[in-house]
Length: 210
Image 1: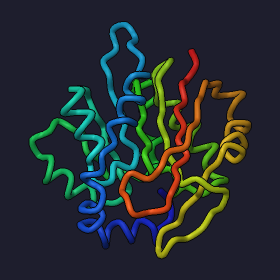
Image 2 (image 1 turned 45 degrees about the vertical axis):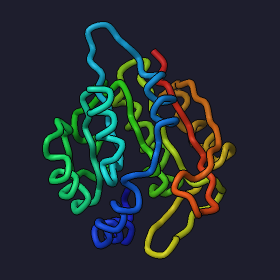
Image 3 (image 1 turned 30 degrees about the horizontal axis):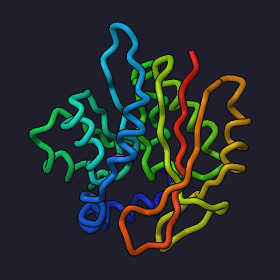
């Protein structure tokens, strides 16, 4: 998440955003993602929640699966609220912008990356490098889930920037990184889970090849 007005929105509206999203049911997606996590010998599960928002998903992975979770967000206010609300959890909350991940020394660190409705704030021309840097943090065979609003535009909705995604646009991204970052992937479309919104979601699950 690199756009300042977008970050400003989440910092200024942290409480209302959390209230709106914390109780959305995501169990079908959780199961699809976690069923694909690798089990490399001698390596414990470690999930990176990229753009953790309300902390809903991080808590589920930590509480229900009992796995190690590192949760990052570019919004300092969201991180502060998650640290307080989930104080009893073992989640590693970090205020970190997506573009700074490459400087963390996290190569081959995670078995899974969960990027639910977060990379949609990254401009289309920055996505190839962003996804490549994320794939570098996965262990061999690690999986990454990402979701975008379904469409083919870059736009502002109020104060927030959105990069919509469809199959053709996603293939454009992959073509730019396929030589250096070979992967397997599957895509699918889902309806919005909040209710009352006419929104479709483009979902993708990627696996880093050995």
